[in-house]
Image 1 (tube, rainbow, N blue to C red):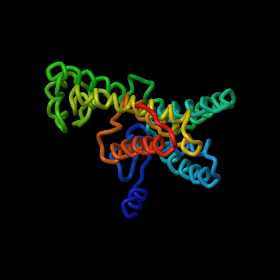
Image 2 (spheres, rainbow, N blue to C red):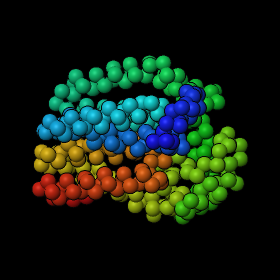
Image 3 (cartoon, helix red, strand yellow):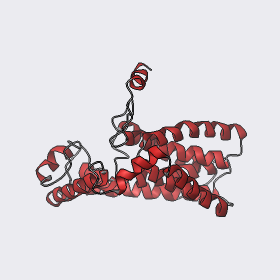
Image 4 (cartoon, helix red, strand yellow):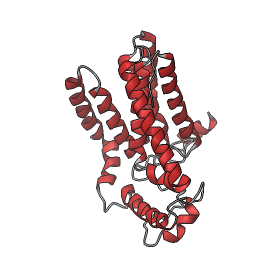
Length: 272
């Protein structure tokens, strides 16, 4: 509580750079953690049969949704948009909900602070455009992987291993991950680790989608929420690090565990 109060006391809004995030080191870390929770809560709010479950889910949505919006994480906004569109598309009234989500997205994107934040990302000449920096980071990473294709850089070895390959790169920070879900696993765990994680994600998606279609009614909203959470993790992971942090990796495995529990306890056998 003291840390939060101190951060609020010294808060200064700067939409060009990374906004303040209190206990995290980057604003993306807030969105990376909150959006999978939003996925599950939104699915429960829309589909749960129990009124109390829906009310609790709405309360969770208000907190995590506000946190994600105020994080000004541009990749977080993208993941949230994909999540909302997919959730709307699963509903019988999708022909109303999908356009409503699009309109809501446009309205939110025109809110002045949000529009200012997004504006930096669509202008490639802007020094605060993070995609340019990421592109240079990915190029350096691929140059490094040409010399270390099988084992990558090893756990926690990326920053040191990629350093000689940073020639001409515009990024100056000592980044410890390449900020792409494929490159993250390739560099940290090698090709075998990348293949294993890919299999786990695909198996999890298949498991939860099938359970959403045929599990018991009480479990279906949870299974759909976990499916959407995994999709959001992959989408956000295209430009960030959605796994190699204690809170995010724990959240990932908890989601998979709950998804599998729903299959076992929901009275259905599903092959991964």
